Length: 73
Figure 1 (cartoon, helix red, strand yellow):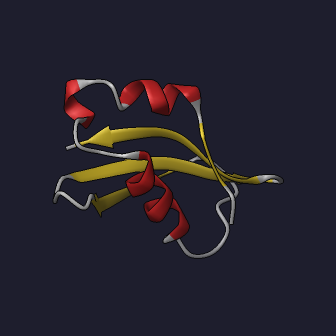
Figure 2: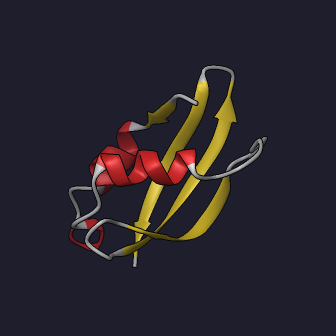
């Protein structure tokens, strides 16, 4: 499935709280969510390659899976 990362989520990656979270980590996490997501939903407990935990908010749209924001822990 195609993963689309919003500009808001990209900006959040520049903040200290989201340090060490890469676009690749987000894409892998979004692809790992099974099923269909009809409305924006928060998914918790993903791990980066470096071991940092994060949450993401995503929903499915006709062109793919939209990642709305990323929340670092």
